[in-house]
Length: 258
Length: 210
Image 1 (cartoon, rainbow over the protein chains, first blue to last red):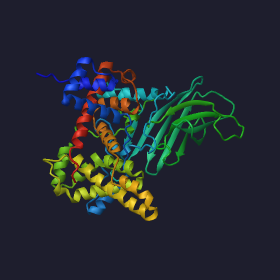
Image 2: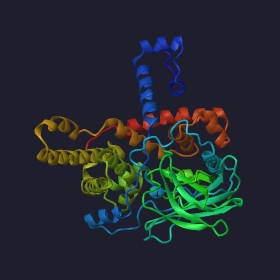
Image 3: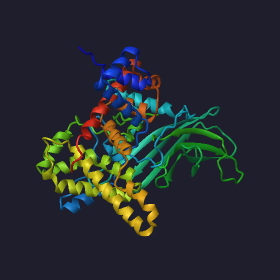
Image 4: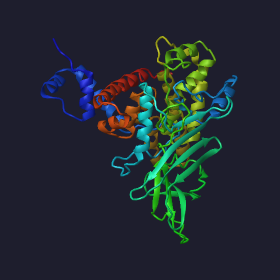
């Protein structure tokens, strides 16, 4: 009478990168079935370490498919909100093809998960029936023939040693992306405030323009910038020195979900 | 703390994770879609597109490396699936696997065409290698896209937990902390999620006929 190893136990060993205990190891040597299960799970775990982002085809493709088939084109599938507020895939933004690992281990930005933690926790709470409102993604389907607008709001929080806070609201439409930025309590430094999109590679950045902290501002984002990994929204204090580069004096920051 | 009180609880995180739930109201299950598709009911094409267009498009995009080709392939796949719907038997086949099979064939055709073009312009020396690669879509890439698609279809909170574990590379305590869930719950979700992904992948790779 052979007692096979539990799948869950095998999965745990795989996930924890642990070697099965002696008894289990012996069993694995003798039992092809368990060995196969174990190998399969190791394979899934290996593959899961580098999962790609799902990419969405452009919304006009649906019409093209129907046209080719001579069918009536209904609304683009997947633009509706589900009962629980989860969006269908339409608002999924593609990741840049060269980035397979969106969140490099050891990324020094601990803060980047703060707002997200709140958002994710709130959702799970909602799923579990506790419920809490939080900034998040809103899909507004204006009507069935128009593309949806996806809105993603993130908090901007002070970098170490600075004060202030704000929001960045990413508004995604077929016509392009815009970033609406509001800030408060930035202090009264010498110079002006500038909005940057910094790439998660920590090397490249693009300036969106000057921010008036009293009124906030809405900035056009060059196409595909967020997809290319420019997800860190950074407000810096720039001296009036005519140097177009980032002063390195970041005040508040947030990271768009990637 | 900023609140957007729209009555929806959808974290920005989910802008990345399509929630294709098979249990949501008004969202038919894959097997319902498959059956309606085989019967030629037109509304099922939209349902199929909603469920599988991201998978098809992403497979093509990862394999071919550019969006224009991926759009072409996606269009071809859905058009040809609809036209050949009579050849799909919902009783014996898994619809996702069938579509994936069509997708892989289309990708391979496109790669062969490319390599023919390439051969026409390049020296014969280069062709041995390119030919070997031409009809092969990298299996790991395909599996990873399939897994990503399956993960997106898992219900919450497991989907979020797996997302944080696999995409964000977060450790259990970090995830537990973020989601205000007991550590044991998180671990068990990841464990079962891994088993679930394995089973789904097996299912969807069950047959590659098209």
